[in-house]
Length: 456
Image (cartoon, rainbow, N blue to C red; front, side, top):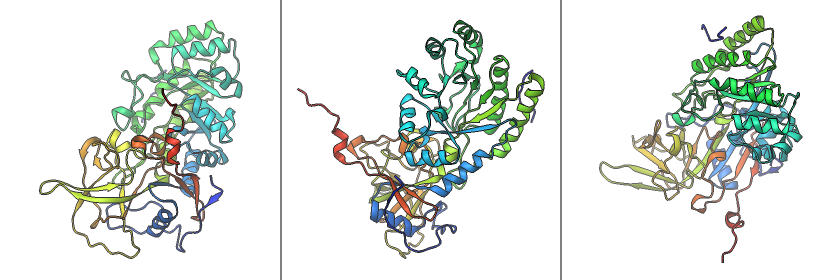
């Protein structure tokens, strides 16, 4: 039957100015507004920590985690945080305290999470490469999803006759979806997972090493179309049907998150309800009550952080040209716009409290501090090389803050850190009372070259 759809926190840096921390932030003179900070907080953090600086909001992290944990399911649910989105130890421990598990994308991520105090038994590893220390990682207790026939062979050689629940098989179901072609990890143009038509080869390897996989894993892309995600869920159940020992289906993540005010986010309840029905239908036909796993990353952290930057210069290229804001940040903290043409809200905060900026209709292109013409903070949507001027509600001046919202996912973790020898930016967490704690110090510049070896 085809199951397709018919339908460090301890380092406190001092109290913030008094104010209604959890009240709705004041709307700036711009089409976008601050997510959880207010202008006074922005200026205060800049004074104490400097810019560029990432600021995470614990309350938002917990709210998103609670939403993910309520994902509709028929016979049990495990939510795994895709730690590649934002692997700071403070974030990992926050999610661990709420009951989330971990999705790791390399053996090194496993080691990093272990160092943060996360139990290896709560980790699932799906990697493009076979870790050189796979045997040691398995001994720690991780779950492993074989993402190629070679990886399945490697597991078999290490664990012949395995009857634990450590082995899973990741398939490419033949369909993918993503915000752009660069974030689509399913279908014939993707190298991720074992192509679904290679099921006979998978079964042959399982028989060769007397293996009984406990999981099937699929993931089609980041920012994927909810309808395609639902359809792929049915296709994934067809793969489970062919592996009788499987008791868990991991459907990955990739839930679309709206960063800009004009964008919408995936409603997990809406997309999850019909998938729950598919699991119930499968149980009636096959007799197996499958447990569901999901692996959100962006959904949990995207709008849980802001990147504070400072306008260092305002330059113009004359009539018919552009007005540019040169920031003290760029692709060294925020690569997504340069890589994907991704859109992030940019909110101007005057450097002086109470300063009024009259609306003048000007539009600015925000650029980064790297010596790269591609270091563009405000491109046109999905056009990484096309300048996208933004109206900021008034004149921008040297020393103003430009707050880049939606900076929690694939920003600190996926930047071109140390390019042009810029140090890694500090990171701050706001606790439930709005008090900021440093969770990553600014990198001393000397660390950039400390591993270099003199020659000759």
